[in-house]
Image 1: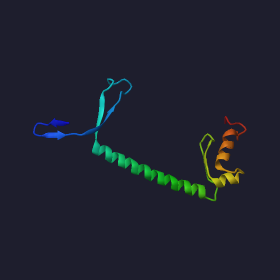
Image 2 (image 1 turned 30 degrees about the vertical axis):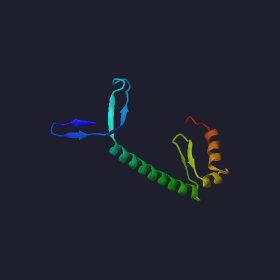
Image 3 (image 1 turned 60 degrees about the vertical axis):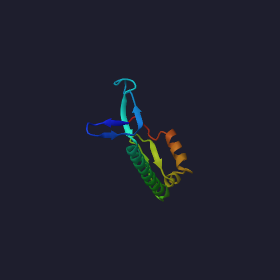
Image 4 (image 1 turned 180 degrees about the vertical axis):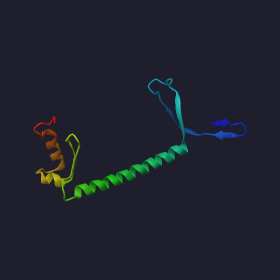
Length: 115
């Protein structure tokens, strides 16, 4: 595709057309964004690199938590157990963190939970 810009031509090679209808605010089939191949490839590579970095960080975090000899857990302000390591599960008498989380989800730990 070319575009005559008065004094010269601008060559475009679109590779992706994103067509959306934002809750009926635009006519159906309106072209919203045209992304060129070079930009799309760079953004895709950046996304892949960021995802790999995040995955490595999460794996490192998980290794530290799961390998700790101290009991470590996380709860929501409402009292729901969201994460527990192996040491905590063993301290509380469970074989695994999954067993502990399952038991915690079924139990009511408070005399008056509405308080």
